Image 1: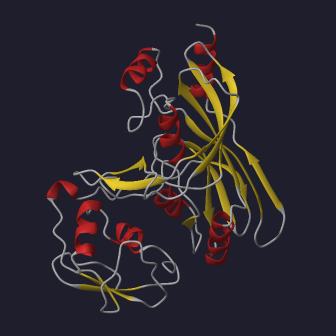
Image 2 (image 1 turned 180 degrees about the vertical axis):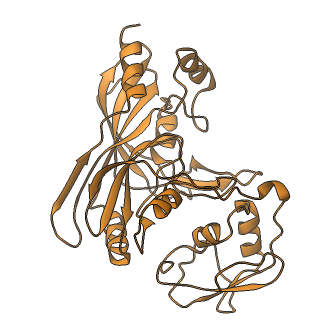
Image 3 (image 1 turned 45 degrees about the vertical axis):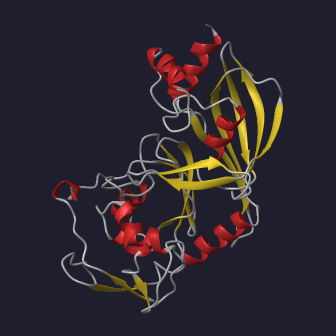
Length: 312
């Protein structure tokens, strides 16, 4: 089946490019413009089936699985503009297996939930790769190092490295307040929840949350802010953001877990984004066994803000 007819039941056969993806992520890609809340609703109700069996949003699909997709009503305003601009991203590393870019702030990794396109759609349009998938994700508001796989095996191998904590990922974050300790080990479990509008959030939950570990090291103390390096020991959704909030030092410009008054103060200084940047990645290439070690410098608006608050 090449196209989805929203007015009837459809049956989608999982291709090689879809293999091992979560069901919800695959449906987001297939059913562009359909709100995530609606997708999760039809999965929970059993209207979506894999090989005639009920399934969960987190279930991984397998090559040649047949997915039943019920009729979908898409509101008129959800119709997407099909125009996708040409990708113009700084390339930090590329070989026949991986493409690593510097993702700007304000661009989502993929389309969905009212976003007509993201990094992956732009790159697929502007390149001739037969296979191109996100190896991991960054929040829309986060800039910096983003890894994409150009072959299925590279994707699977990279995710295996990540699962076994064999990838070093370090982020630069500017937080509200002045940290007392030069180094903090934060082990606070995280659980996901969904707002009534379908937006996904996380919170600290010591009873039912998934283990999450971040190591923070102070880079620079300013009058009312602290620049820290955050080293991910696990890779949970919004992990650095919620751990900073948990410590009482939320990331500036964070509209989900940040401090409203601090964000207003920073906005008055001309700073209008979240200060979180994927700065460094280090891993052994799973296919060539070569060391991949990449550092991505801070964008100019972040260095300008550091200079501004360092002198006030």
